[in-house]
Length: 119
Image 1 (tube, rainbow, N blue to C red):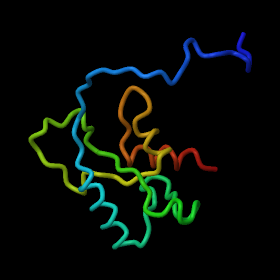
Image 2 (cartoon, rainbow, N blue to C red; image 1 turned 180 degrees about the vertical axis):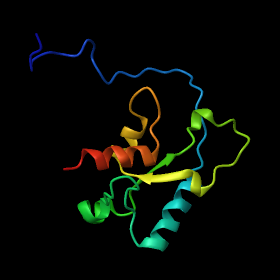
Image 3 (spheres, rainbow, N blue to C red; image 1 turned 90 degrees about the vertical axis):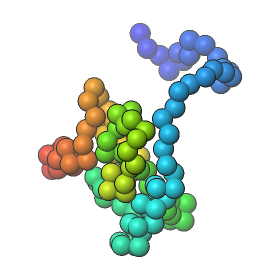
Image 4 (cartoon, rainbow, N blue to C red; image 1 turned 45 degrees about the vertical axis):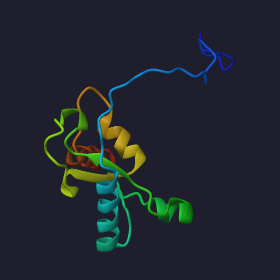
């Protein structure tokens, strides 16, 4: 049985140190992608669902959007440079849905799922 009084298996928030291999991302390219979109459209709407953080949250959401690599960073070999067209600007929910499940969803595929789910 699950109860609202259930507790975590351990005390959360403890510090743990370790070494990890990380894939590098170019934050300057992401800034450029956002600036280009702002220059062209005046806003940063999600490429999948059209959500606009600034329209919803005002000044707090201004200039916020996530960048999704259409070619997964894990599949990049560190030899080919990413271009702005290789990025999709998406809201946080759509970004999670692009990565949800066993296989990576494409922006176009997620748009199609969203369209089919609408009444």
